[in-house]
Image (tube, rainbow, N blue to C red):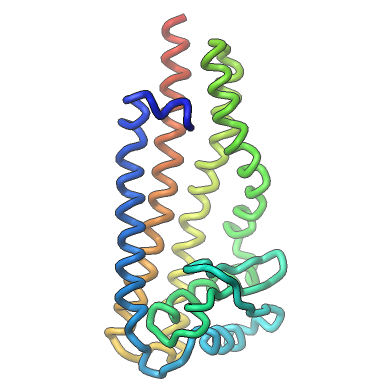
Amino acid sequence: MFPFTFDPMYWLFIGPALLFMLYAQWRVSTAYNKWGRVRNTRGIPGVLAAEQLVRQNGLFGVNIRGIRGHLTDNYDPRNKTLNLSEATAQQDSVASLAIVAHEVGHAVQDHTNFALLRLRGGLVPAVNFGSQLGPLLFFVGLLLQFDFLMWLGIIFFSGAFIFALVTLPVELDASRRAMNMLTSSGLIVDPQEKRGARAVLTAAALTYVAALLTALFQLLYYIMLAAGGRRRD
């Protein structure tokens, strides 16, 4: 990406997506700061909520452990582990419930063999490789005016777009499951808490929309440069 940052056209493509990413991050920060200070009615901390949801969903093979960091919560399907950051695990806030339920939603996806989650997991090695090699191949091809290298770089990088495209519905589905679990389990009983949990989950979903837009517009930028080179020939 770096060699292209001096091109005004690059910012014309990527700028709107980056601005949306900043907006999404602001929404996450705002929602978390607000609902992270609101105690849930039952006064239950995140780790106990996680244990209850794991048990109620029959996820007996799932382990719950603490990890360092801020908003680093995740579910790892490789070792069936629900990783909760210290704040999420210990706080009895509405935000903690929303985050925990979302990650349990991923555990339920794994338990039920949710196809898109499986697809996303299978894409990870190729995406990690292609997202690094793709721009390099493209840049070398652009310098050498070698169309084959440019389009090969585009093909490699397109994996990042496909990954973001698959990730968005996976995350939206996990959030949908989270809201259903929070209400059906009785962890959330107040309309205000429900509104707060949905605000946290919606803000988080925006970051995945922003990631998809960023990958899309960067891919379109590469295609525009490659097609432009061919027209000049």
